[in-house]
Image (cartoon, rainbow, N blue to C red; front, side, top):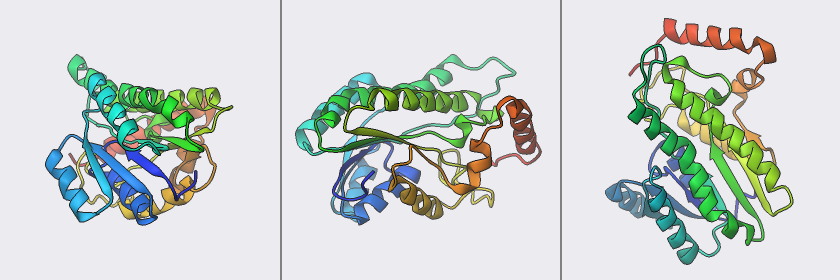
Length: 252
């Protein structure tokens, strides 16, 4: 994608990776609009970074997505980049009954949220000279973490959706890119300062370089081996990865 001259909408833009991307794109002179559920925090960020606008959005609610999309098209007619970043990552245990409400919340937020948001804006994006849709998935889309089975499945499904949409948009001016983060030191689960987590600033710097290319998937070099999931050997890979996590649990 082009890194300058854009009008960019970022869901889940009040913290973590979303806010990091917002600040990076803002520093390059782009018009940035962030979405989140906390009005006070949106106002605080807009005051701290003049030029970053905030809109309230509950990404898990279809009606709210439709409302925000309508306002975006009206208020920001040059909108040409959508970054589907919002997500939640509750723990679960697939060896026991998984709470249905929790599963629905994850899927509404992590999978249906991006699908609905993109669906509301895709025709507008087609009308721009050049547009980009970005999905924030995860390395866990390729190698699931067993302590977050539904989350991992939601990211795998979003990766699959991005592949299909990229093909269907092949003859348009809309490109589709995917960000697949490793464990980044944010508050998605709990910001812990764990040395195994990649510092947010380093992740944003490497990711911005990747987004500035035409690569379909943007991932940091440290996860290449996990992205190159070894076909029929994936069962052992997933087992070994999760055994390591079991032996060295993530602080919660």
